Length: 416
Image 1 (cartoon, rainbow, N blue to C red):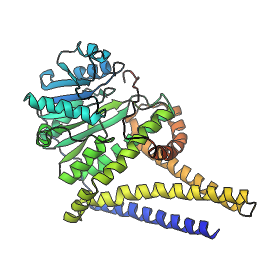
Image 2 (image 1 turned 90 degrees about the horizontal axis):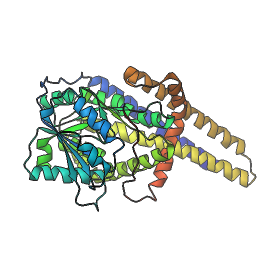
Image 3 (image 1 turned 180 degrees about the horizontal axis):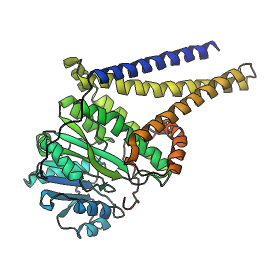
Image 4 (image 1 turned 180 degrees about the vertical axis):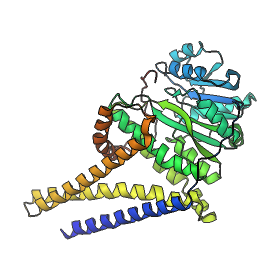
C-alpha cells in the first residue's frame, strides 16, 4: 500500500508540473502574440519540382496527378517526378498519360526508406543541372486543392526556406480509426503549426505536402534525411539550423489515413521509434541551440511543449499499470485492498477518458467546416478517440521488437 501511495503522489507531482508547464506556455504565447505571416502575391511565378515517391501506388497515383494538373497553377512552372523501383510497376503506365511527368527509377533498392528515394532523385536532378526555385514533396495518395501550388508560391516569394501545407483527410467517414488518426494532424495544424507560425517560430513538417527551397537542398547536396520519420528529422534540422519556415494554412491537401487499427498501430510504431531516434540524434544540436539562445521562442516551446506532453503520457501509463498490478497482486495473495486499487484504477481511467473526450470536441470545433465528416461519425470518433490514443502503448511496446525498417501500408482510397 505504501509503495502504491508513493507512486500515486509521484504521478500527482508530475501531473502538476505538466499543468504548470502548459500554463507557462500559455503565458509565453500571450506575451509573444503575433499574427498570421504576411505572404507575397507571387503571380504563380515560382518554379516547382514536385517529388512523389510512389512504389506500387497505381491505385492512387492517378488521382494525385489529376489533381496536380487540374490545379490553377501554370503547367510550365511544374515539373513532376514520380519515383518508382521497377519498370513493371503499373504506376509507370499511368504516369505516361500525363505530359510533364517524368518517372525516376531508383537504383539502390537496398535502402528501402522514403528518405533514400527522395535523396536519389534530388541528387540526379542536381547532376543533370536542372534548376527550379523549390521542391515540393507529396505522397502518392495525396490530392491537392486547386490553389495549393499558388499558396505555396506566395510563401516562397515571401522569403521562407520551407513551408508546410494544411493536411486534411480524404476519408473522414470511412472508419473511426481513420478519423481518429486524422485528428493527429488536426492537432498539429491548429494547435501547433498555426500559433507557432503566427509568432514567427519554426513549424513541424508531417511527411508530405511541404516545400523546401532549391537553395537549401543544393547546399545539403541532396535530401539527407532518411530516418523512419524523415519529416520530424527535417523539422529538427530546420530549428537547429535557423531555417525560416512557415505554415501555409490555405495550401490544403488531402491524405489517406489507415482504416484499420492494425494498420494504424504499424504506422504509429514507426512514428514512435523514429521520434525517439531523432530526439537522440539531435540532442546535442538542441542543447547547443538552447545554450546560444536560451530565450528564443523555439527553445522555450521545445522545453515547455514536447517534454511535458511525453511526461503526461508516461504519468498516465505508470499510474494505471501500477494500480492494475497492485490490484492483481492483492487478489492473488487474497489480501485486503482489491477494492481500493480497483476504485483508484476506475477513477483514473474515467478521468483520463473524459479529459481526452473534451480535447477531441475542442479539436473538432477548431477545425470547423474544414473537415468533411458526418455528425454520426463525429460522435463515434469523440467516444473512440481515447481508446485510439491508448493504443500508442502497443506501438511503444512494438518498438522494442521491430527493426528499423519501413513497414508498407497500402493506399486504396480514391478521389477526395
